[in-house]
Length: 245
Figure 1 (cartoon, rainbow, N blue to C red):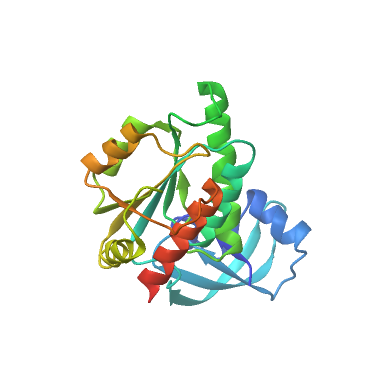
Figure 2 (cartoon, rainbow, N blue to C red):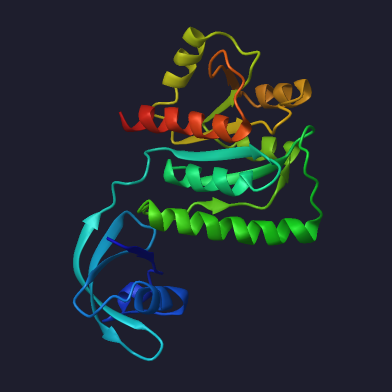
């Protein structure tokens, strides 16, 4: 069933009016007819089963049929601090991260990042990245839309991460798998978790030390060297499995 996001104010209307791009998508792309059902979310802990009542010239009119609790969100808020990769890898990482339950994504310019962005390009990229997150949230039927924050420096990201309950950093020089499993297990019960993933060139020693100073824990993801986009998906998959167990 197709899902759309609305504001809490919209849900106070009767019928609920859906305009803009969503209206065009419902009427002209999906070609949905009166009587068909959709899901609405206002990013709270509820989702709304609705039936299309009809169309005005600028909006779809929908009626709320039933209200359910939203069980699609992870019990912990996960923030992905992603070393800025080259090409279109960032969009791929955002899409997969949203599907795996991430709450927010922070692109981080690290020492070994290949890409260099000026402020104008960075702002346009952030707008595009949030559109990718929205699309992925709809596709995976998320109850919330994860936010992609503006690009941060490593120092800014470390300060932001200090507010979180638990910090993890996959690193090729970390201790073995037995130690890493114990560290991962301790993520259970935390309300906020930060995950740092290095760019193509990996972390510098100074960057690792910076996160360790913020009480971050380095862990191993195995004996193989993973691409940055693979490391992000692997780490979030492990956390999703662990937290939903």
